[in-house]
Image (cartoon, rainbow, N blue to C red):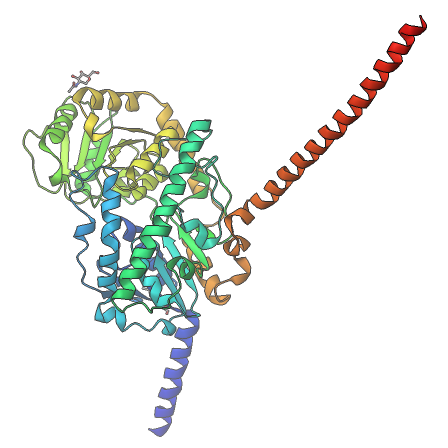
Length: 517
Ligand SMILES: *[C@@H]1O[C@H](CO)[C@@H](O)[C@H](O)[C@H]1NC(C)=O
Ligand SMILES: *[C@@H]1O[C@H](CO)[C@@H](O)[C@H](O)[C@H]1NC(C)=O
C-alpha cells in the first residue's frame, strides 16, 4: 500500500512536470473585441491550445470550447461599440467610438475577475491593440513577455510599438482611396492624414484613457504611458499575408504576419446545399453574406428589394445568408439560410461570385478559395479592404448609397462574364498558398520563441528609442544643407572677388593695348 502511495506521488509529479514542459501558461487579454476581432484572436488561441499550451482568455464573448482553454467572462455589454451598422456608416462613427473607449475600458478593467488576475503566473501575455488600451496598465512593472495582436494591419502608433518605420510616400493610409504610385497631392494628403491620426492617438486618445484609468484608481499614478508599456511587446502579430500586400513594404523582425489563420481547404457540403449548388448547372452560384456583425434584418427595405429584383432575373442561383427563414418576393433561384459553412461554399467549383460586406476574414477566405468579390462595405475596415481588393483587380465595390437595380445588375453581369477577375484571384490564391510556413506554424513558432528568449530583446528595432528627427536623419540633412549653403555663399563671394579683379585687370590691359595702337 505504502509503495503504491509513493508511486502515485511520483506519477503525479512526473505528470505535472511533463505537462509543464509541454505547455506554457498563456494569458490572452482582449475583453473588448467584436466578433470580427475574435475571429483572429480565437484562431491564435485554438492554434496554441492544439499545441498543448494552457490558455486563459479574458473575454466578453465566450466562444471557444477546448480542453486547454479557460475563458474568463467579464460579462460586458459590447453593443455601445457596435451600433446598427446600416445607420452609422460615416467616417465619424470611428470618432464617436473612440470617445467611448476610456469609460468602457476602465469599467471592464474594474471587474473583480480581472482584478484577480496575477500576471506573474503566466509565461506569456497576448494583448489586443484595439480598444483594450487601459489593460496595458496591468503589464507595467512585469517581466512577463508580451505579444500584441492587431486584428488588421499596423496603423498609426502601432508602428512605434515595434519600432517599425512607416512610409507615407508609398504606403497609402488604410482608409484612403489611393494606391501606389501616388501623385504629389496624394502623398501630401496621405502624410497629413497619417500625422492627424497619429496626433489624435498620441495627444487625445491615449492620454484620456490613461486619465480615466488613473482617476478610477485602477492604474497607478506613476504608470508609464500606454505607448511606452506597449513598446515592451516582443512581437506584434498582424492579420496580413505579406505576399498579398500591395505595395510590399519594409518590416522590422518583430512584425509577424499571421494572416490567413482562418483559411482551410473546403470540406464536403451538407447534402441539401451540395445538391442546390450542383443544380445551378453551367451558370453557377452566387454566395451572398454580410458576415457576422452586419445584421441582415437591419438592412433597409429598399436595399433588400433591389437585391431580390436583380437576383430574380439572373440565370445563376443565389445562396443568401439571412437571419429569417423567408422574405417577401423571394425568387425561386434564391435560397436563404441562417448559418452557412462559408469556406466549404467558397471552395465549391460552381461558386463564381461572393457578395460580401468586405470584412478582412471574408476577403482572405475569398482569395484563398479564389472567388471574385463584389463588396458592399458597411463600416470599420471594410471600406479599406474593398479599396485594396478593387485596386488589386479581384473585386468591385458598390457603396450602399449608390445601390440601384441597374448598377447591381451591370456589375454582377460584368464580373461573371469578364474573366479578368477570376484570373487575378486565381493568381493571388496561389501566392497566398505559397508561403514558407503555414500561418499556424508561424503563430506557434514565434509564440514559443518569445517565451524561450524572454521577449526576444535581441530582435527589437533600435528605432524604438530614437526621436523622429534622428530616425530620418533630419538633423544631419539640415546640417548638410546649412553647410552647403554656407559653402555656396563663400564660393560665390570668392568668385565675385576673383572676377572683379580679373575684369579690372583685363579692362586696364585692354585700355593699355588701345593706347599703344
Ligand atoms: C491539451 O494539451 C495537452 C498537453 O498539455 C495535449 O496533450 C493535448 O493534446 C491538448 N488538447 C487538445 C484538445 O489539443
Ligand atoms: C439585368 O440585365 C439583363 C441583361 O443584361 C436583363 O435581361 C435583366 O432584365 C436585367 N435585370 C434587371 C432587374 O434589370
